[in-house]
Image (tube, rainbow, N blue to C red; front, side):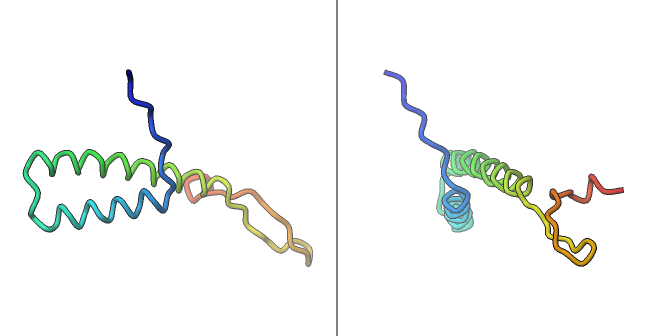
Amino acid sequence: MPKAKAAAPSFEEALHELEEIVARMDSGQLSLEDSLQQFERGVELSRICQTSLKTAEQKVEKLVKKHGEFAIEPFQDASEQD
């Protein structure tokens, strides 16, 4: 029977687990094999965090004052500006 794929953790859960992995690896107590497994999991968690941040960034809108009133404009990152 194939394993059911677990739902991706939230940004906060992924970040917390990533912090724990870094602490374990920094301790120097892991074997080489365990370190490699932890590193692979860390890369996976890092990608989850990056994707979550990119998604949030795309949803950001900024308030700007136009003609004395506030208006909402879509977010533009620095690479999209002139």
